[in-house]
Amino acid sequence: MKIDNSLPLEYRTEENSNRIFGFWLFLGAEIVLFATLFAVYLTLWQGTGDGPTAKDIFILSPVLVETFVLLTSSFTCGLAIHSMRLGLKKPMMVFFGITLLLGLVFLGVEINEFVTYIYHDHATLSTSAFISSLFVLLGTHGAHVTFGFLWGTGIMLQIKKHGLNEHTANKSFIFSLYWHFLDVVWIFIFSFVYLKGLM
Image (cartoon, rainbow, N blue to C red; front, side):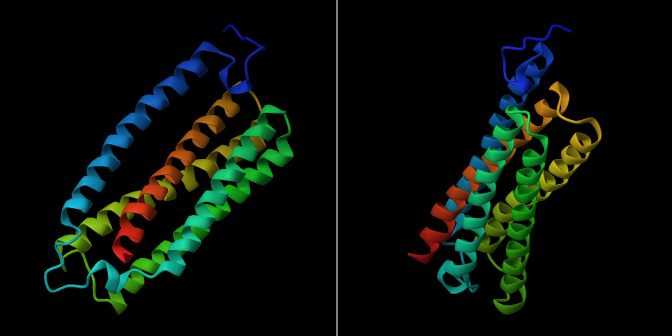
């Protein structure tokens, strides 16, 4: 296995470079998935029937918390990768841990939001086309964040056991691409779901 020490740790082998390229292709498929969910939502968002409208159920304050928490987690994820490239294992683990903790906070606020929709606003999947498309879009993003939390936790355990090397650095960098992608998707959700619905 040929190693090029002039490259960042995560790119130093041809296999690692191929994995990163392959993950970019995977993210392309994820873009198509979320683009489809956004298209469905934007088509159905006024199909409220007898159910609540976006203005009836959206509350800006928890959404602002979710946005701040997730964007901050993207920043700490970037700091983790920067620390990794400097070979600083302890700071990397700290920033990685903060990233995952912020992801948990985001999930907690989102779950509370869903509970409010269901039990306070009486909005369920069968209430209207608007609610069902909203739940599918938000739920799919939330499921991705949940998977990211579990994935990131697994990577941290590997780094703790094996240290920073070409293998663990490659996994960490690919995870960071995934996490930043989820943040970008959230910006679109914030803009085209919540802000649009509150106008």
